[in-house]
Length: 223
Image (cartoon, rainbow, N blue to C red; front, side, top):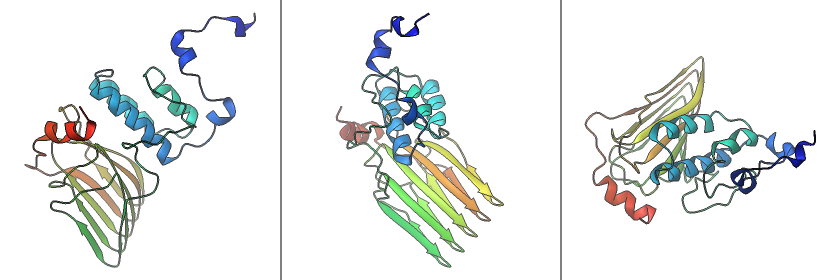
């Protein structure tokens, strides 16, 4: 049987899979973040349920290759092949907007500050505190990449945002209190990284609520 003569559905024709050689390429952080942005938009538009979005976003940050990413958005309009990203205003950059470094010292970000789309935190025999409980979110998707070596990185967020994490500890502690917001359009804070003989912890701050959420996010989403 000649499989090439089998009819294709319109969705398959519209969203071709990456070539086999490209599908085996390792996915970058920027690739994963771009797919996460597409899934976020689909959730806001009602194309995915909260449960479907949560399941797919977990698979995004577990994916190792481009071929594993592509099926997660194949059924969504506007999806592009993972190997050809088209950066936009909502895309999380591969390079950090800000680096927080604590080497035998401490670094703190808290209060009414504006977090960038990507923040890298390095704690080497030191302590980094990132408090987002009063932050002014200008972006719906915020990534914190934490590296702890004999140090400590602590992240706190408001109780009504979505908090997710994907990382590991090597003779250290990696603890993320996953939180799924019930409010459509809520900011998503993604924690990634590594703890080596150190600690990385992220959790909601009790009693802290991001207020006027719909008004703020409607402005940035252009709705």
